Length: 372
Image (cartoon, rainbow, N blue to C red; front, top):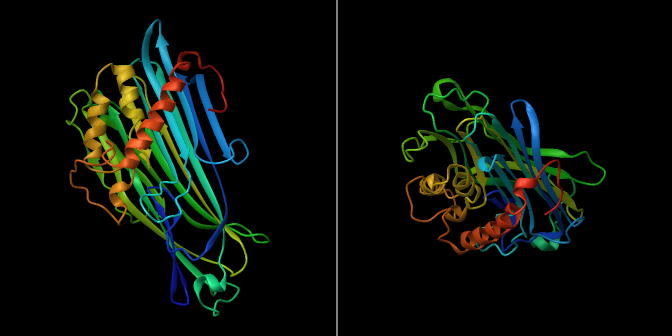
């Protein structure tokens, strides 16, 4: 992200769904707040029967990041676990150094059901708000003026994947859906909020095992969003259709006044809806793939989820590490979300440990629970 101030650039970057100042930033961040929310609802037919909810607000319920919200529900029939849904949502400590991948916000959703009655609704949301002030001396110029003549240029860079899968190749997948929404707003005291960038992408299922990109609105119109066929990669999952976000860039502009604080807020949300009897869905942005292998291992009791995650990691790095210097390649790679980089390794251990803590009471989750 670059603010063009009389020939001087102030770099601000959203990477792997994140907001960060580079080391050479000339503006001053005078405040950072954020939140994470995770929701899982299990349906038996049309009736909701179990749910879990977690929310962390910085600094209201936690003084500082990381704010990791985890919601997780398992379905049992007798002693047999037949379905599972899980959401991780993270607001991470902002990276002001300009070194490495910021990944200030991220989320990981996954659900799958083997039984004939369970469907899932998953939702994760993370926000970050930065209060910023730009002074003339910060930019090394006295030519900056109040009003709309001062223009900032910025971009959001998304790294992640969203997909729908089925164990039956000709299954009617109508109703299965994965959705991503990204919003950036500018706020200032005495002014109405301004939407700088907003877009939504929806991957939806259809008849005869088909999956397609059913909606791409706002800033996603015209973006390169390939639907990649992973069918056959894992024999137990003959239908796997995914949308890859390999460093997808979404530019936007805004105005600002010198010496007057203003806010930039990033809000990212993901939703997934699944069907009973062998249908699953997942979305991961800014994080390694943790939930997919775990959910599949619990329900199917094999490593099909881990094998699929490895295949996806060969085509897109959901952590954003690979796209640190710009848009990356869709060619296979040994790195990526499996955890070759130090960020991915550290975050994977952090998320896995948190997930294990939640698993202990997963069978008893009934109603809404708050906190983590």
